[in-house]
Length: 232
Ligand SMILES: *Cc1c(COP(=O)(O)O)cnc(C)c1O
Image (cartoon, rainbow, N blue to C red; front, side, top):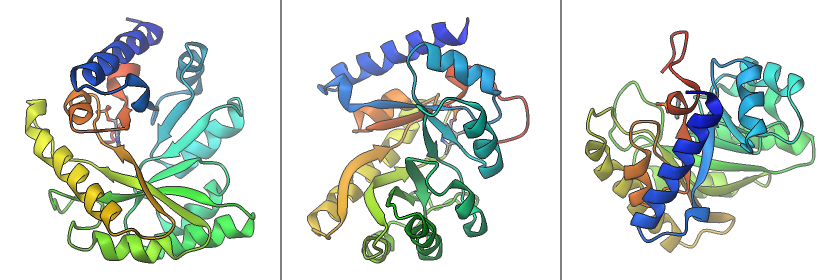
């Protein structure tokens, strides 16, 4: 299967999952996770109409962004170190992984320097696994309030990564929990906060995530094949 074929298959599955859930398929966007994949793979995806790409590593993202067309909409989805924020200021359209106030302050500072605002999602570690980033469900509301007070940031929603299950249904309670948390944040009516996006679901479980309300699914290996070197 070529990358183009994979995109067709995954888009169909996204559409079917949305319809099955009684949702408009247009409300679900595909973030093609291209980490560890070469620029040629991204070009191929671009040629079949994919414009949103997710990357996990700052250096890799910057290298690809200089090489590839400007029309690409880059999303940063991985753990982000504050000292690397400057390199991606103005380059990415959405950061999915804001998990602490110190990081939010640095994003605010760097986007402020270039006179722009950055759209962000707050990452929640619902399963509280020690090896995963994200704020706890309990601390979420306080973090969102603090982040929303920063002038060069706009909170657009939440992101999570559930534990791995062989059966995608296993992840569903975590997806549902993120949707419920989003409702709770929305109900708090914080200025500068929109709970518009739910970033959840990957190659193995995006259909379950769509059933629970995902608006951004982050799919990597099902589109580009298995990754060649060690990363999650
Ligand atoms: C790698 C990665 C994905 C994509 O995972 P696949 O299982 O290859 O689809 C999604 N989200 C994050 C945060 C990732 O790091």
